[in-house]
Image (cartoon, rainbow, N blue to C red; front, side, top):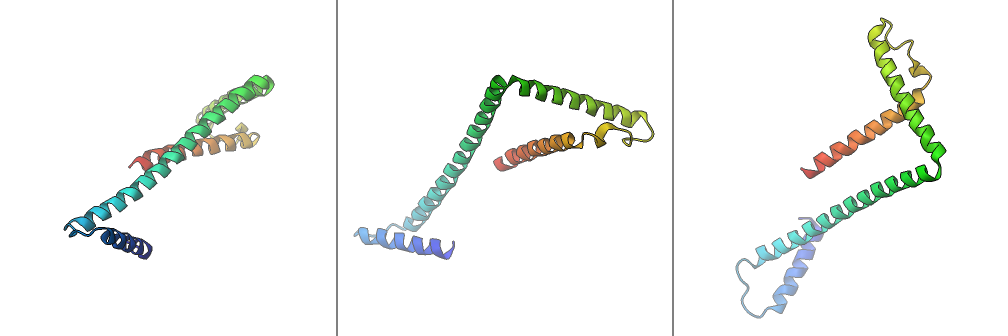
Length: 139
């Protein structure tokens, strides 16, 4: 226990002993320590639950925002869909060219649309980090 926690425990123990006029049971300290530990665990659990609720609310808000933006600005939604479609086609083209030519990716369209691929790489990295955090945090 840290010095602050020990001081807090000593004060709680002193107050508890002052209130009781009958003899103190042998397991009194163990029960008090268990109550302190349970209170700390409840505090940590409440913090984790709040973080998960905020994350869920953020995901829901982001989804609703995307739907509303697609409804209000259909031009942007169509252009994003076209961008994703052409980007997927370009990725397939790059893979085909990598296997078909001996030069590899030197003649590929990557050098012209590298910003799009950087965004895809960033999103992919975020998804991987989120999944790792989700799986590791449970254990």
